[in-house]
Length: 302
Image 1: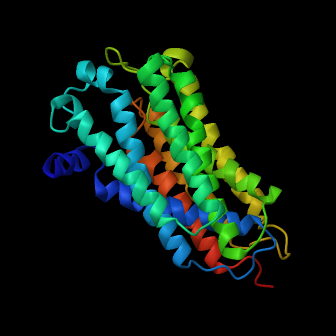
Image 2: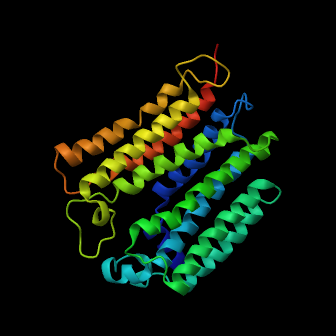
């Protein structure tokens, strides 16, 4: 089983991509919550952030395994070379991985109060989505919009876990200041979600928002999501005004839009059949990194 799971990780969860992605997400969005809350001053990453980063790396692997189990029937027909449909790993192996992983995550976060609760809710919801798929066949795999609506709360809940970690670290209570960071992270993720499925040439049986909205509208949604995310980030850093809740370095969050321009140029001006793969991933990764950079440089140098 260990060998099979090793092959699964290399095939479905390449560490060279997912580890930097998960760690930067955990640290960057944690920093974003501290930027948004005027009650937090002089924030620096601590041991709790390290726990959150490790939690994210494991959590993303578990979410990948859950998605692969849900998509097994589809992948057998359309992606037979992937680890699960090819037989390189078994459903039972992934069930063990998920079970052990959940226990490890809960133990890892023991003593973190509300952060532990938030994590348990997120994991429970993800397992509930899998149960609805296995037992009820809902939502139908071809209904990509309903699928997005059902799975999207996982994104919100995992970011709430990060916010709960900030509250645990600082000893503060919940605040409406968390809303903008949540919206910023959610819309940044939507850019990747939409852009990676933009295509003018659908493959047989391909699941894409293009089947619902068309290639042009889906591409526009991808661009709008990124722009809105950056607008939210600017609103919470407030770089154009001096003050204790603003960051003069907040303009840095605009830089990832360069990757959106690059992707849009390739798709529209270059007439590529698909939105380029790398720019959306780099938009998300650099956004997370720059949230951290802005937080470390400080809210107010005046």
